[in-house]
Length: 290
Ligand code: ARG
Image (cartoon, rainbow, N blue to C red; front, side, top):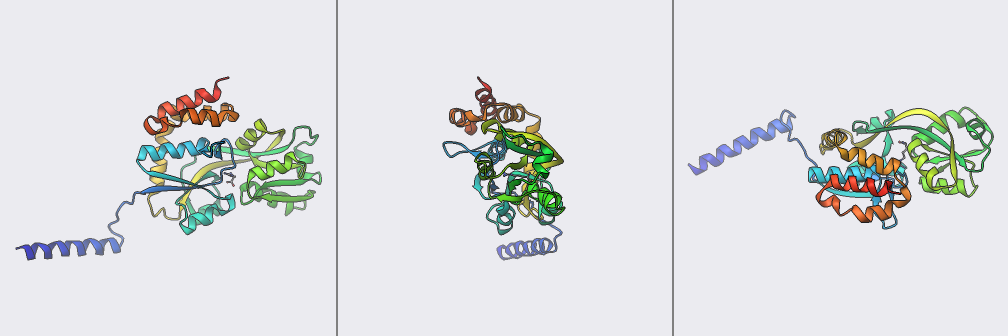
């Protein structure tokens, strides 16, 4: 009797394994942990505050999504141009770095639904006389972050076309590029408009114009999404967009005073553990409060 039921169990198991191997049955994978790769040099989406916390709109979204879904979260700061390799090698399983949706990236990774969009902002020092035309074609040194759509645009449209620039300088991080702009080692720096606006709020620089590339920002996972992460991200984003959490985070980071982030995050971050709605509401209040 016992022998027979063991036999039966084995044959059922065998059938299941055969069906799975043939791809007819599949276990819907759910990730155990989100290991997020980012490039934390891009306020207001991701940067590191004075107390070494990852802060920003995208970082908070990830903390909240992990909480909502009961998933563990680890965030790793990686140079922007090393993000795709880190995904491919399995060092991380999700990229969240304001990455634009591009054909090149879709060839090697899968993307979530878009959740924000932007153009490219052309920055010069506050006291500069340059306008967008002279900045990009007046014989100056122009900078951008390596591996970004800005770097590609400048390479394709200025360098390759023989437009008059002195050189194109590519930086590992936006912070280093902004520093070189402020310190007069370069004359122009290009970054996505939301980040350019944030940089201009806290540095002696200004935006002289935009390049209208209309880019959508998405998260990327490994090609084929073997861990089943995309449905989790897309469902969570769709749900969050209908709540006050989304608006409060947008207010905190796009309207609020970014100089206050360390103070405000220290004040409210404990709420992330129990009540994400209260967290977002109080963060927005603190960041906007004069
Ligand atoms: N949106 C641009 C791109 O996808 C730049 C993103 C830069 N992000 C960052 N976290 N530094 O290439």
